[in-house]
Length: 219
Image (cartoon, rainbow, N blue to C red):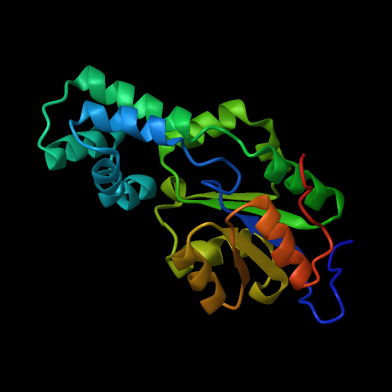
């Protein structure tokens, strides 16, 4: 089925997937709240602090110890090394809930003969967790983890690295990500890109472009 398309749709031979909030579920509000309490802040304020240095952390510029210590300093909180280590473990675990519908779609893509890649902004501890717990990572023809290449989306170079690893051109590639800034960056390189919000929404968007391999309704 590789390269199949609708009458007016693009010819897609490869699909590149993000991990966070695409192949995994977003952490629950109570998980964010539990972490926020450690730093003496509310959930919304904590999320902003969490995001502040996340790019540097995911790129591999910061160790886990440095990242969490900086967050504590920004929050004006006195947090022990033991507490910071615990929060780091929670952070990995709460991002470790795979989305079964999307994993099933990944399997369908492989069965259809379509090349697949994983392209994720992700730090070293999370990479280790994925490799230890998710055998389906082996379904990907190529994997790009930001901390291992020293680059993060939306830097064009990390997309180019992934295309090169897959051996495909932008125009034959479909990219799926939950963040609009990353989707726009892919499109600027000539990659077909869709923003992910749910498997049901993705299914509709794929139907609209005539892509033949669709996520199931309830895998």
